[in-house]
Length: 486
Image (tube, rainbow, N blue to C red):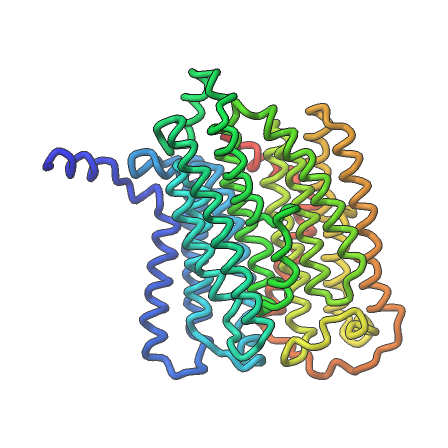
């Protein structure tokens, strides 16, 4: 027994989880502080969470090119995990900036909002750095449970209750698929370590055709594809995105989606690389389906949050194109695209946070009539983000799609790249339609309720800088993405 304890202590390496450890410490500190804070005083919690995210960002940057392995090989703080950690932290930072004034406006100044954001981010970090299926599952559960609460945080609003309940029920159902797939792969390989599963399948080629192996792969795919909102596991997305508080919707569309992609890539490329011919064919079909259904359905939406929900489904399809390619350009393109999407999508949602009235009214196409004239700064900002979401130069969206489609072409998936470009053309309609309402329709209101608070304005400015920087000089970040490959 003493030897087992010594072995366990030797395998512990806190450096491998240091970013998430720092974040969890700040989250627990916030929980204790909130106990003694008067109800409605959320600004100190917001500021402390921003400090926590900034400190964690510094810790994550210092981990670049200094890989750490810990907990008997269950966690790896490599460049891959560090790159995604930076994405999670940026998404959380922008979300916190746009949240404080919004929570007061909606009548829910709840201090627990901020530690939940931090814990969700920590869960995403464990998913990105997890090298064992059980570690990835642990991260997924921490992330998901926090998001269930955040989505249904506005208890007095029916649509928020509906969003939280739907996300909880469907999320729990998808988790069952993930666990069942893990159990089947454990039954095949005798381990849940991702790399060891890959080694076992390489050494025992006949097991690649084993029904348990195929079933395990499919069940894992269902669990991850639900989190990234790929078709046909996307049905929860529009209702949850529309019903959840707007900052939560913004965060949900970027951070957790990136975490699911991180886990999906590590498991399928390292653990199930021997089955690449099988999962490539599956993902090729799902990528096309996801792009088309997301873009075509978005055309019919009049609620902007719902439109961006279907847009996020389409963007998941674009990212899947890089995974189908499964080469250096395609995989690094996904990393770059996740960062770019974080800036452009959170920026668009930050504008919606300011444009909406109490009760989140006015977030429709008609409600945006003349918005660009009455609020010039917000109109220009929204235009930049929409151009980025379209994939037009010189924005981050263009650079991200270019790398992903280039990876597909290099891998020989020319038709897949063509279909991706075609879908980008389809998306022009519903993105441009928002601009038409902003600049070519008579304003129906004066938008006097718009409160240009410092936090949300800073989040919009940071998002604009990120979108333009990644679009004009994408080379340095793309080089970092290539250095982050396994």
